[in-house]
Length: 246
Image 1 (tube, rainbow, N blue to C red):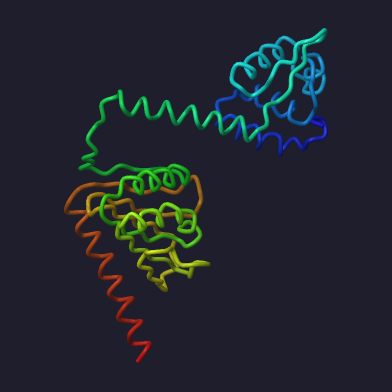
Image 2 (tube, rainbow, N blue to C red; image 1 turned 60 degrees about the horizontal axis):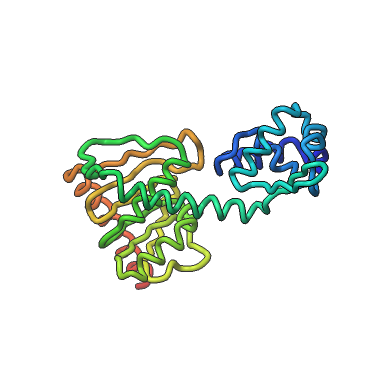
C-alpha cells in the first residue's frame, strides 16, 4: 500500500520518475497506483493526502503521458502502466525525437579551443559517455577502477569496432576489458584523464561528489603535452614491470 511506503524511499523513487517527465505530484500519484489495484480519484486522494481537484488533474495527465490507463465504469478508476513499460515507451519516444532534432538542427563544430569547466560527478560522467560515443580512432583513459567498470560496454564496443583503447587504473578490474591495452599503476589518486583521437582532453578529479570538477579542452598544444605525459607514465609502468620480471 502506498500509505505504508517509507517516505524517504517514496521521495527517492519520485525523484527518479521526475527524470522521466512526470511532475513530483504526478510521480507520487503514479507510485500510489503502482502500489494499489485500480483506484478511483477519491481513493487516490485519500491515500496520498492530495486534494481531489489536483488528483483528477494529475490522473488525466498520467493517462495522456502513458503512465496510467482509465477504466471507465459507473465509477471511473485508474490503473498504472507497469513501470518498465512506461520507461521503455518514454525512452523509445525520446530516441525518435533525438534523431529528428539531430537531423533538423544545425550542428556547431566542436572546436573547443578554450577551456570548459564541467562541474559535478553526474555531468562529468555524461561528458565521458559523450566523448566515447564520438571516438574515431583511439582513446586513452585513466580513471579510478570503480568508474572504469561502468564504461565496460562502451569500451568493448570500441575495441570490437577496431578502435585503439588504452586504459590505466589503480587497482585490477574483476575482468579485463576485451581488446583493450590495460595498465595498472601504483598511483591511487582520484584523477580522470581522457584523450580522444588526440583532439580533446578531459581531466580532473573523480570522487563521486557533486563538487567534482573537470576541464575539457581541444587546444592542440595542451592536448599534445597531456598526451606526452600519459605516454611517459605508460613507459614507466612498462619499465617497472620488466625490472620486476628480471
